[in-house]
Image 1 (cartoon, rainbow, N blue to C red):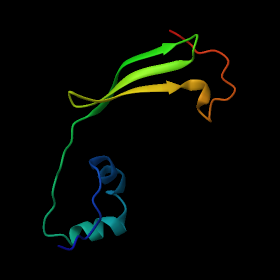
Image 2 (image 1 turned 180 degrees about the vertical axis):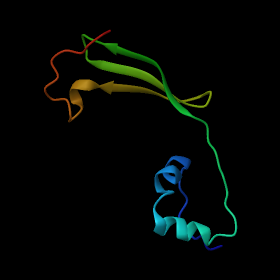
Image 3 (image 1 turned 135 degrees about the vertical axis):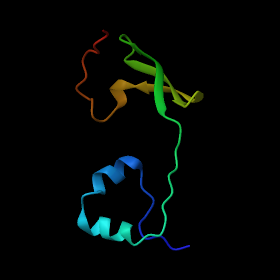
Image 4 (image 1 turned 30 degrees about the vertical axis):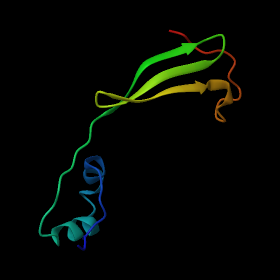
Length: 87
């Protein structure tokens, strides 16, 4: 099967719909498909202000995919972190 355009998300379709070159490619298609997936969410988010560790559960739909632990002081973008807001 040959596609006229790579697979994109519905959000990307909104962003691209007004670009004339993209619209022209899309109009060359005989059909389109819509797919879906469950929403991804972070739940049970907590921050320990003493240890600067954040914990959370990563869900896809109703399924917990993984329990996550982040050492906030170890993140490269936050070397200057002195205190974590807790509220």
